[in-house]
Length: 565
Image (cartoon, rainbow, N blue to C red; front, side, top):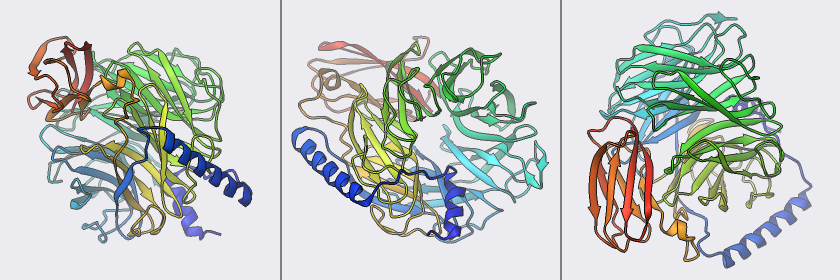
């Protein structure tokens, strides 16, 4: 029996209940043995398929509880971590708390060593959910505040108080490269407004998207707010119907607009033209540069789908990532594996479905994050409570573990791996690293055990896991398409972009960087057979979408779409 304090903490940090299908002990043992034999056979016969090795893992936090919600790469090669923190000074946190919970920012180097930390907050609950690095090297921190005007919160509540508890508002904090606060601003209505994602705008401001129940029905709508470079709210828009509609991601589009992603339970109406397939479906809303709705699309099965990740692809298409409880129905072509599965949907540039993929075991498997790999494949990250079953080839470490699945560009599964300790983990982020490694991020409630080499500092700590040898480059059995694919990275990029081909070229290659209108911005030529990536400087370009056009003698012309932050 778990101590009541730990059960309450797990519910507070992780939000959703744990559901696991119980199996007899002898069944689990036999299943594990069979799975191990199958994995050994697969490894001996399939060239180029291997699991990455763990390089290191680290924890970050104070003596109470932290929840690591977001990690971004920084221009200097390190990373910035954003955590919801209930701790005071102690552990890796050097500043006292402002209130019940603060934004807790940790700057680390490429090897995970802390460089500095800061906290921002008021007297109430403040929860960071998204970060973007600004062109000047500083950062926009986005999330939600329940605080009154106090501490670092310089504005009063937009909403009301309900039963003595503060209603939530969007809260954006602008800091410089050293973590000094430049300004803060809040936005919202009379009820709950929860920020979840942001993107930079060409004028130096930021767009923040999330969900708002500040409406007549008091149910959630998509909520989009534009802040300028000085923190002034320029405009806001809401999209939804009479039932629940929640937004989780936003990406810029090639025409200068934006694509909002989330899920919807509403019937068709003023903002929605799509009839849901089940209770909740994936829902996309396309808006113009000034936030006006242009069109919407939906994708789903006959039960519940939650879209949490939207990733642009170099050919103009998109990968939608989230979780599904549906069987074969609607847009879903594969049967469910358990209670909840990973579900990804590949779209072309016209938003038509190309393929979909279901991945999971017999328990709960919830996808929260997606990363594009250097070989134009995919890394899917989330949390699993499944035994060895379905697509999950390793036995669990604890109640829930990080679960990573690698997909080829066409959606074929390459490998899967779980990482965790003996209690409970929640994965929220995945990044590819410049050395072709993988960085996993989230929260751990486990002591030193399993894949976890260090104890937590408090009850719950942010947990990073660095993997090497990500298996991005396949063997001689790689397809002709993958062998000749060009790669542009990092994407999104900031100060510079690198473009390379996995196996070199027979002749010189011309690279052209263009804006969405086709205007030529950069042009360079690389020598034949060069495996050295070409560097394209981006320092004088504003944030947005750009096109890299590639012409060579030994392959058809190719266009890659990249995002500049």
